[in-house]
Structures are given as structure tokens and as C-alpha cells.
Image (cartoon, rainbow, N blue to C red; front, side, top):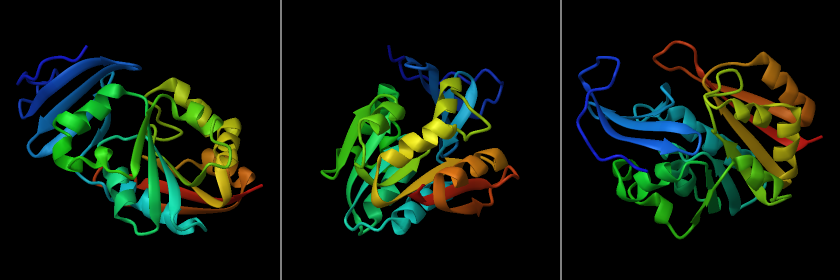
Length: 232
């Protein structure tokens, strides 16, 4: 059940960060908090995302759609998050439809009538958008050949998981699952909060071509986006 809006300071003692909402989600506790002009999402005490800098999320969608052979493209965004990926998809002229897979209903509510609406401005209600609640792996399994571009930003990356069960998305079977959900000429994009040589090796084993893009961020290690084409 959603908690009431409030102004309680976060537990770490940072009085500049205010808890806006605390809820029990599908995969554990979710906290939405504000620090100055920045909104942050915390999952079970672990930082997940914020609205400070969406360059790498936008890059994920832009490069994946560009690598796809289709226009207009049917795009899957795996993880609504704070909405940067969805906003980028809707800004691209080659995108005809966006399916958003989101595990947590509360995250969607934060975008429809909560604080994150100030970021996405009702984008989830765009006529080109369909939101599917549930695990993105289930949607991939039910969508053989269904997407021209798949953009996965479902966790913090293969080597820094907030939700341990997401590891199945990054192993060889998970890569094959995503590959089967691509239409001919489609492209798979995967976001990560850091480099992963082991994951990149698995991705190259499953796809004929893989490009790695990096975005410098304040914390030091760059955000990474892999874009893969032509499943083997």
C-alpha cells in the first residue's frame, strides 16, 4: 500500500533529501525522495536511479533504434524508471510504437499522478505507448519476433544487481530470449552502470555485431550501453 506524502528526512542523516513516498512494491520497499531539484528512486535501501542526468538512458534508446532496420519501429523499453528512455523513444521520428515493461505498479503511478509526472509530462498516456506490468522476461518470452528495437534498462547492470533474479536476464539464456523477441533486422540495447567484460563476451557469442558506447558520469566509472545486431 502506498504511503502518504511526507517530509521525513532520509535515514542516512542527509537533511537535504526528503522522503516523498515509501511503499511496499513487488520486489521490496521502494522509496521516492527529493534532493533539491532531483528526484531519486531507492529500492530496498539501494540507490536505483535519479533525474540528475539521463544522457546514457537516452543514448541507449537512440543508438538501438538507429541500429534497427525498421521504420517506423516497434520499441520495447524494459524498465520505466524515471522516464528518460521513454521520452527519448517518443522524440524519435522512426518510432511508431513504444511498449514499456515495468515490474512495479507504483512506479507507473508516480508517472501518472505522482511526482515523476513533472519529468515525463504524461508520456505514459501518449497514444503510441502501452505499459505492460510484470517481469520483462515474461514479455520477451511471449513476443517472438515482436520488436524492432529492445532497450533494456532493468537493473543497474549485469554486475551490480539490485534484484538478484534479474541475473537471468544477463546470462546466455537471457540474451537468447531477447534475441528471439527481435524481428529480422532488429537491435538489442542494454544499459549498465559499469563495464562488464564477461557480459560483453556472452553478448558477442549471441550476436554477430556488438558496439559498446560509454558515457562519462560524475561517480567516475562510465555508464555503458551495448547495442547488438544480427542474432546468431
